[in-house]
Length: 79
Length: 226
Image (cartoon, rainbow over all chains, first blue to last red; front, side, top):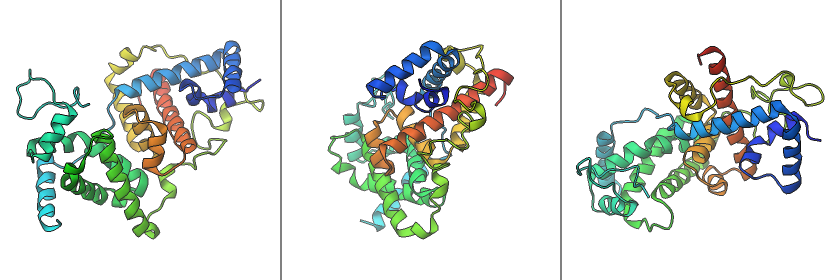
């Protein structure tokens, strides 16, 4: 039987349906019996759903118009 | 298709959004407003990818060179992949080329955080040894979340800030793998090629990033703060 640590380590693969057949069944069996791991898996799924909705942190970027002007200037000198 | 991402720069708000084909047509025609919108939409993503490959010191230079290449070669875009994929490929190639030149000056160890593939997940708050008993079962209970509905969590501005702050602080490769997978929805094989790492490593990096964000939500649920 898998340990909680082993389940936690492959949890993302499990959620992505990327665990091979035998391992998949072992994880499901463990989840049937372990409330902590069920909660862990649920929280990981929720985290992924929440993060999907949040735009990547916007790095401070230069004014697009300014950057475009620089690009066009460089394009003239570097054909 | 950029139907939901892009509005024609000169169109009224009620006008239909541009398709990717229409956008590319405008870019090839030299529409400055279209190119400026492209920059504002994708600059952050290109910086993230560049940093993951070459690190902080040279990333801005690489991205500037990439925008030049995109500007000069947009007419060569054949539409076999999406425009986003094409641009990411340009920046990843530019970063790898620069990495070969500057290898001595780039500290690659810091890009990963921990070495990916480490079975014991040293340093990850959720999988460190003290969380588990010697037999591998959880030492204590996984904390309850009083709020589990994603829609409700997303309405909590403070939490959103916490997550964005944590995301910004992830090691560059971890952040890039997470963004490319969970936000940009790229396939693992594609991410491998862009970041020049194995599929197994991509999966580990994405998993670590998710766990780091889950830890943030744990803390927020418990304390109301980051």
